Length: 189
Image (cartoon, rainbow, N blue to C red):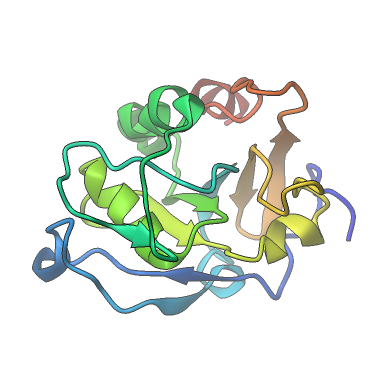
């Protein structure tokens, strides 16, 4: 499949891994159970903002938990993730809702446990932002927006409105958070 562009239909077979937020699992050290999240089905009749981040390891602020990924402590931080990208969407959730956005989701190469912990570390509750896992970058590869060298997801944003693509763009400048920023997405709505 080619890169998505405005006017295209969102693919019909997009499934991510996801651990839903619950009060019982709100503590960062609590693990939930990953489920398959059928984005094609869940988003068919909704307005959705999906943004993607490429970093493989995510530092979990304010934790002393020895969280690991494949036996390695998570300690690397990609500054664009934690300073420029996700916080912009968190801060702009009210504005996104005013524009009629039903779902905001972030997808990354990380496994669902890391994504869940990352949401908790950012104090995202009640599934305000869905932290979705695409550990093989299957979706990003299917639309041509995966990093061929690392196999990770690219950094991009897509707006889907009732199954139709309204905005889709990928960062082409290394380290940039422009085309996929919350401000750019808001301007496209």
